[in-house]
Image (cartoon, rainbow, N blue to C red; front, side, top):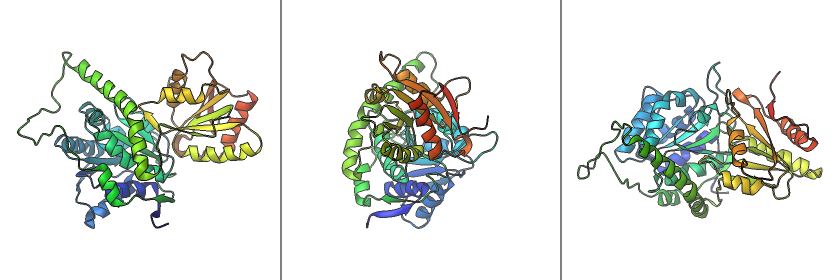
Length: 387
């Protein structure tokens, strides 16, 4: 097809950024994100975008530059991974608290130590309460599409929150897939020109950004952030439906796969959803009533939609690619909480897997379904670890 192109996940992200043509991109290289900025910097060098690309000395500086540029009224994007996001931590909170619509492509990678460059979700799970919207992509196609959608979502006048668009390091980021591209004119028409409500450069309406904020106003500002996230939750479905007219797919909060008549369901995010679908197709041929619920948007968390989809199931296994030390795994905790008030609810089991890039293969997923069906699942499981 004319509009299909083989791309890695990182190439899909940088290509979407090219079509968006943001005013400012500030970034610092880190594996496995670096390819996003390598690709985008080439577009800058070739004159295919007129973005001001700021090459900074650290990820902390990258997010700081993004905050300054966004506060000045620019459309701003960046990208990072792992320790880079950890180094940004201070400014990540400032970006969301200042209500700046920055879009950051994240290539998920394990946090050190020990040093590890491969995939798990510990980097973004560490920022789950930072006030950023978080979306997780299964494929390069989703990376491309959701990067474009994220710009409109973050800039919505009733939201004005930064967005992370996440993909699995080396699995999605460096794997080549066919990606259906949107005509560039359509992309530019969709994202349109950014018209900020406030800008540091507007001398006719002067504002202060980042003032000291003691107990007399801090609480109210935090409440406004809570309200903005709730508005994002209610506004997003309409925006996703509108975007489907541009990209051809409705990117819902959640994506069910053969759950309608399923008794036993796996819940997971990102690339593992694709492997799970393959296993489901095999088991369905053997008469097993199994299904998948993929979580696409983790913040704001779609608890009501999940309960509505799965409240009549027998068992649920939640597959987390992150651990929470001293507590339940992050996604599992959210799922358990979502079903708390339901009288008739499924049995829910936790499976932590794939830390530091440890392989998750079809056999492991088939084992999870087998344990659900046979009643042998434990409440807490570590899938693929050497005990």
